[in-house]
Length: 126
Image (cartoon, rainbow, N blue to C red; front, side, top):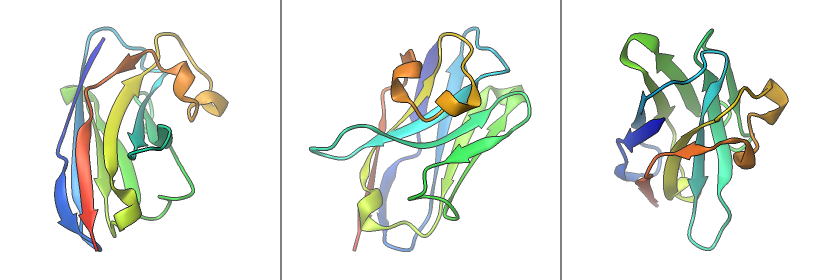
């Protein structure tokens, strides 16, 4: 499984960005693709996840109401629409996929994800 994230950039606070993650290889439709981020000096944290089969989603509290995860099954691509961005959203954003089937209660746990994209930098200026 390979993941390729793109779409990061520099944006002013209050602005928007849309990240994309192209996924190739064999993945289970019953699994999510997750979005994580890592700011300098901080641990990698869960942001959002979207399930291939039905588009169901999960979000970290810090991004609820501002970020929207979605997927396009035909393109094998997941998206993270980020609105009302804040300086504290500045980080490298990664998409990731589990190697085996994981249950919903595990979607936010980064150690359940075996495959990671290279990351894309998002910088929000104040």
